[in-house]
Length: 178
Image 1 (cartoon, rainbow, N blue to C red):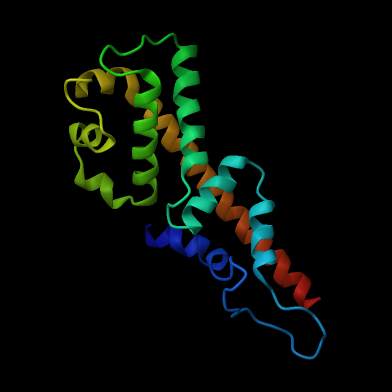
Image 2 (spheres, rainbow, N blue to C red):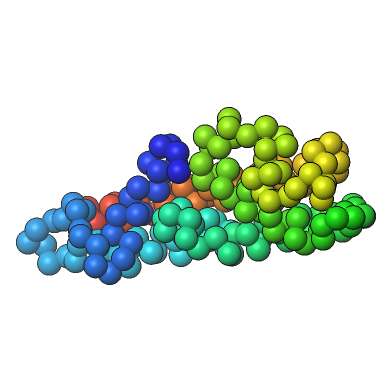
């Protein structure tokens, strides 16, 4: 995960579990409860879309729960391919290809340094799509646009999540001071 993304989600990652130590500012002697993991989880609950919640869980738990995000991205590719009447590739099913590309998009979104290390052909290889299943040129002309839609969906979900966390954090601290 890159540094900018880590900073956006840092507040949420500290104290997300019931046994996490609490380093939040507290007003001693007021009788108020300090922030706990439930307050942090409230930031996730305040997000509007399920994709933003799923992406947040993916980031907070270090890539260990990507199934919701992957399913959402697969559906983006499949629904748009059907809407534009794309023909099923000959050597790989459309749903399998969408599943592999979704995993690649998630990995590249969480670790942008991968972008510089892979050529277009290398990206297909990284995804698990071999040259005999689909050439790089066919992918670029027919399917790359759907990969871009997936990447856009993840980027917008990350943006929505980071804004929701910041707003929730600001409102929570405002309530603590009041």
